[in-house]
Length: 332
Ligand SMILES: NC(=O)c1ccc[n+]([C@@H]2O[C@H](COP(=O)([O-])OP(=O)(O)OC[C@H]3O[C@@H](n4cnc5c(N)ncnc54)[C@H](OP(=O)(O)O)[C@@H]3O)[C@@H](O)[C@H]2O)c1
Image 1 (cartoon, rainbow, N blue to C red):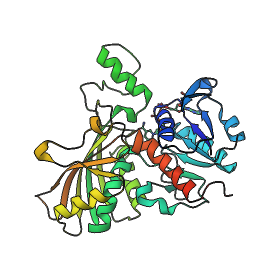
Image 2: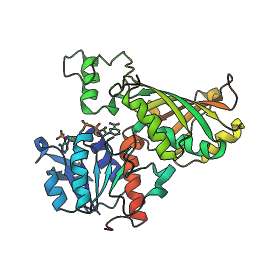
Image 3: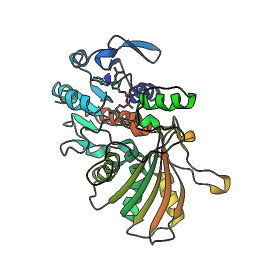
């Protein structure tokens, strides 16, 4: 396979190269792309150095698949140009996610919607991905009515600049600010811009993308998304109300068998998911699984995943793996 990685110098792009190598995706030729300012710089893949090229050279090389993580604007501009050349694009930005003509895919949940005609495929928002892999098996069994989620999100979700801001603050060094406020020793209840309804764009992504991925408009999701000074992954406190009652042990058993989900729920031994332990893992971890005693048919749980992996790179590579395995690439 010829694979282009657009945004190869960024946090997600770097992780993408690592995940492609680790999962042994059959890359015969790698085409790393970044902005004009990075052309000629080198990135490393499987011990070999590759020079960054511009997008026009990448399109001319006609890769089988192009995995984008270069921001929404770049994606809006460039993804259609790749697609027009017959190249399948898997895009990590929010540009195409809610476009009714584009598929929004988490392989464990809805890979079956993909066809060879899908030339731009959207990778969902990181906090949504880790939530839906847990919600889907529960929805299939108990039917979800409503979800109330509060997130505790890693600075790596903002990109290179935010990691630098946190590190500078910890060292007491002045530097460029990715956030409006200091992030070290702080919690910022704003991720992305505010919308007219008082929610942030990140919060509405969780509401709308969940419905699109699970494919059931009756699921109501209300979210509060918060940035905290951690690195390893995003955490979520999730309250789920079902239409049907559940047996807690049966529910835990169901989750333990769900694809991509690992149950870490042993409070007697202080076992529960944390960003420190989810870091560099491809799975989504769920723990603190307990009945909400204030309301019937309702569950509380705690979901953690590495946002640069399952929340971005791993999910995108899994989509590419599915397309390849089902012979859905290179079909006009
Ligand atoms: N971080 C996450 O957890 C996460 C999760 C899901 C999705 N995403 C999405 O993934 C994208 C990248 O995020 P990130 O965290 O990796 O950001 P980042 O660290 O700031 O990296 C941005 C990348 O985009 C490249 N780029 C910028 N403008 C470009 C252009 N005009 N043409 C080609 N490449 C260009 C940059 O190249 P230069 O080095 O040359 O500037 C760099 O490689 C964003 O859309 C983000 O929303 C991020």
